[in-house]
Image (tube, rainbow, N blue to C red):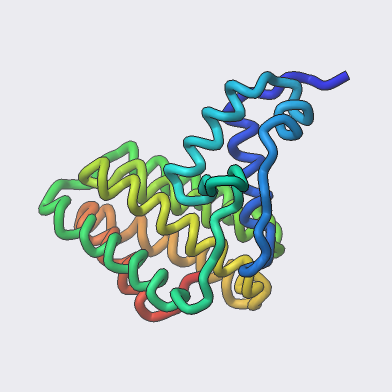
Length: 208
């Protein structure tokens, strides 16, 4: 007997599975019926979840094929990193001299706890990166930029999972430092300093 899962839980599980698929060439089809049966729900919420994942560029629909995991194009690897960096810069510019938001500081503090407790493996890496993704997208100065940051960061995470970036010994400690240093910049210089710092770290290739 299947237990019915909440839509947010199903979406989170599907995102994790997609990020754990360390492939850039294979076409992977997602079958609504099979997913619905697995989680004990009807096809309607699964269809809605897949639409949300499509908005995040994690899946796409192809005529005659159905819903597939959005492929990663090796030829666009460097460009995809540039997109993340420049979107973070855009957020830094658009937010102006807005002061630090206590809710954002609280989220960073919570993310630091997650990072400190994370195992130094693929799942631990993914958990930290999701925390960073949620903060940078949820607190973006414009919802369009926020949506774009979310999609770009999901793709960036998938690239790093595909090339085993999480396995490099310095990566998870660096992400912990990023959260600590990011919080300091947010307190001192507001969101503009926070987003600018993240863009600089991405540009330097020090984060993952």
